[in-house]
Structure formats: structure tokens, C-alpha cells
Amino acid sequence: MQVAVIILSIVVIILFCYIFFLKRELVRVVKNIRHIKDSNSNNLVHSELTIRELDQLINEINTVISETKQAKSDYKNKYEQLKKMITNMSHDLRTPLTSALGYIDIMLTSCGMDEEHSKDLEIVKERLERLEELINSFFELSKAESSNVPLEMEPINLIGVLEESIAHYYDDFSKDNREIVFDVPTQKQTMMSNREMLLRVFDNLIANAYKHSEGNLEITLKNEENLKIVFTNKLICSKLDMDHIFDEFYTYDISRQKGNTGLGLAIVKQFVMRLDGNVYAKMKRDDLNIVVEFTRQKERT
Image (cartoon, rainbow, N blue to C red; front, side, top):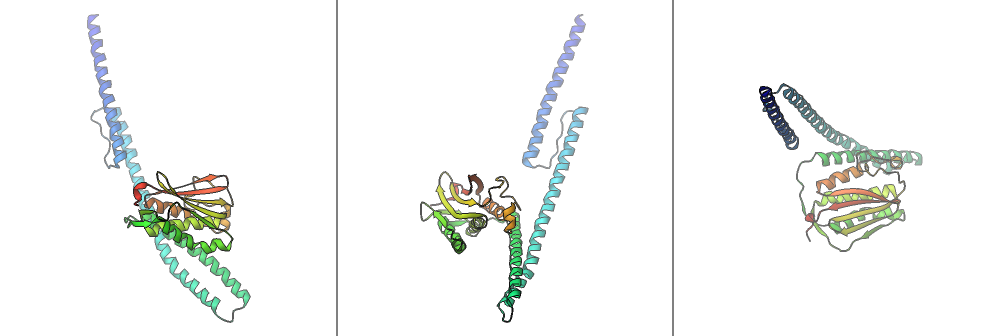
């Protein structure tokens, strides 16, 4: 009886040790997997214990890791090829399109054309201009997504850039008896940014408001914990998915009727991200608020 107890005790101790070392090895394997995931390492998981079942599990994990890495690599390569193709297509299409628009302008300004043919040419010109806008948007978005060159940042007057962008669209709003209401607490707000890219952000937001809203556009500068520029306009159609309005090619019916490419706000998002900022939208009744936000570290007064 005593011998049986001793043997049983030894078995229990062995099982306890087995479970202890197995648990410790599993903890180590989990840490190994987490390190591979977080560091994007090319290493694979390995075990310091020789246990058949554990080896099988690790082999399956390594297979999944290898296939996932290969899939990511293939996706990245195809994505880069697609962006390069879009860029090349944009270049190839813009030259003949610009020439075609030039010939149409010459024909419209020439003498001897009757009114009916002139109207037909105006329609053709309008369609080509819409195509040119789409191509330019493709090119601009592709350039924003693919560029790894650091931006040249300089001290700029944010108020001045906003005023310049507002001036670009003053006549468009005025001819429709609409206004751009600019509310700022100061005449100068200095920050570190890229002037050209920031101007393009504001141009796109004002153009978007002009095309797809009614009434006045309100632009407000808020000096809070972060620097916020708020664009507020009343929508013609409130059927907007707030989670997707910054996605490429997101449109809704009215936008399609007006020939919207669905790229304007996507370009805004890419440019603001490159400027180390944030952009988001929220609805309040029939008003759409688009907020461009920069951290205080970007500001220099």
C-alpha cells in the first residue's frame, strides 16, 4: 500500500511538472506570436519543448503566419501597381484632353458658327471639363496616397489661407445669392503647415459645400484644446452615411445628378492626414459640420 502511495505521489509530481512547463511554454509562445505581430518581424514561432501535439500546433501557427505575410506582401505590391497605373493613366489622358478643350475654345470663338452648333459644342465642352475634373481628382488622390516624400512645413497665417480660399469661390456663391460667413476671433493665427496642401483642403471643402448644399456656408475658427476649423452648411439631402463620406467614390443620388466624382472629401482626408491633422463630420438637424482639427503642437504664435 505504501509503495502504491509513493508511486502515485511520483506520478502526481511528474504531471504537475509537465503541466507547469507546458503552461510556461504556452505563455512564451503567446509572447512570441505577439512580438511577431507587433514588430512585423519575419521570424516564426518555435518551441523549446519537444511535445508532438505542441509541435503540431506551432507548425499550424507558422503556416498561418507565413500565408498571412505573403498575402500582405501580394496586396501591397498590387496596390502599388494600381496606384502607379492610375498615375500613368492620368498623365496619358490629361494631354489629349487639354488639347481637345483648346480646339473647342477656338471653334467657339471663331466666326461663322450657328447657334445650334455652338450649343452642341458647349455641351461637349462641359462633358470634357467634367472628365478633366475626374482625371485630375484621380491623379491628386493617387499622388497623396503614394507620396512618401516629407512635406515642406513652414510658418503660415491660417486666416490668410482661409481668406484666399474663400476668395476663390466668392463669385460662385454671390451669383446664387449665397454668402460665405467667416467667423474668426483674430486676424492672425500662425501655425506650421504646408501652404499649398492646406489651401487645397479648404478649396475642396468650400467647393463641396457649394455643390451639395443650399444657403450660406459658415466657416468658424475655434481656439480650443486643439485648433479647429468648422465648415457648416445646410444640406439639400440629409441621406448621408457619416461613417463613409470621406471614402473614395462615396456619393449619394443628388451628388451623382450633379456629376460628383466622390473624390473631393477623400482627397481632403488624405491631405489632412499628411498634415498630421484630423478631419471628421457630424450632423446636427439638417446641418453638416465638417471639422478640420490640428493639435496645438502644430501651432506657433
